[in-house]
Image (cartoon, rainbow, N blue to C red; front, top):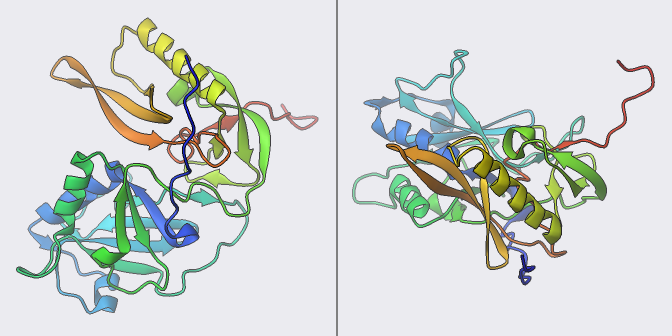
Length: 287
């Protein structure tokens, strides 16, 4: 397979002051908020002095920035907790991150007062149909109401790495996604993604190897829908697909696009997969 050409790194429009959510997480929440017969009154709505509308609620607790639906009846997980989706970013275990310069929460209306403003839920759905995968929210000098001017949807996310990152060579694996394959990578020293995995990036040769490994595993499985993604080159970018079943017909659905960074490396699964190091030595005396 020929090595693809290079292209500029995707533009990071607002650095550390944007929260990133995958649209696969956000759209079900938005659908819930818009379909329930009424809306729950939340602290964020009261703080914003906002009318009762279908909305997403941004909240920050410790290291977690989350979105939840204000639909009533509410959406609860099997453990009884309210269903929330977490932003896809990096965390540094054991360190305290900077607080936003404004409220650590907000009210994001999905519908506007009739005749006024943008219908955010329709905009999100249209963006997903058009091939976008990521929603970002600007929290720089955050205001209680999250207006459409603070939102962006893109097919390829920015804000990929911590600004002070140091890269270490490592060997990594992601068994639930890629199977037993182990790959050489550079990992962000001291940082993890919100799944607890390494933030890893790979050179072109390794990505090509990963693509071939996954294709061979899928062929061995008879191309049945399962947890393994399908990776494909599209120019100098990598498209990531999931396999699913449409009434007995196998189909692919794209859920991410990854271009080369400024060094020509690819952060495949950096914020969506739990990459784990396989080259860490156990301490002496460990079982």
